[in-house]
Length: 295
Image 1: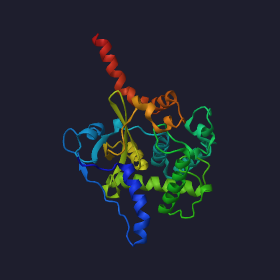
Image 2: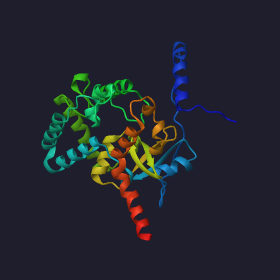
Image 3: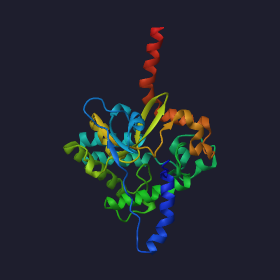
Image 4: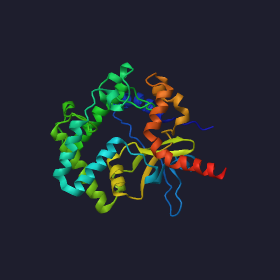
């Protein structure tokens, strides 16, 4: 029987070998796994169907907007775009600045809008984690600081410091607001003019599911997804990887941050429902109505 390493195993082996190989004058280069493009005229598989029928570990499907669940920040970006369409860059800058001035959570609990009934919920808001995350709060905070530093450098703000803030909430420096606005508007104008360009990379996504229904959220490319929602583009090509398991509500007791004790199973379930139920009810509840009428 052929044995293969999972994602975690590959990372561990890579980390162990990187040092000795570097000393010997070699380096490890990541080889992308084969990708199956499942887009086709007619009916395209849903992301959850693709997880089962794709013959490759990574696959691409067209995701209709009805399956996408936007986050609060994506809603803000969409509103910024609407203001820009109506009133131009100046009006959008004022709206965006007001958002950062008004939404300034002091800790994780205020960001997640939950009761601060655990010690970790009083940490810096950048340390927030979801019940299904594999990372600890400390790891997430470190990751977000590095991510913001890298994104700022990529977008011309090389002098970014932690004091300049995070893209999701205030307080932030005026320079960061201007950078984030330019980033959003530039992407909006590009997608509006020529559509999504796959040479910039496919948008990676994750599947959330309960009772056989699925909801999709991006794992990166959040700005592009928000813009597609604002433009009401019919569907978005998205990349899925079988190394990223489906997050099923029925398995809440197995989620990493439930097992760590950061969330109880009841809290995790409630969190999932608050985040996704509005999107799921549109598909689940009508079916229940049909059953009642049939009876």
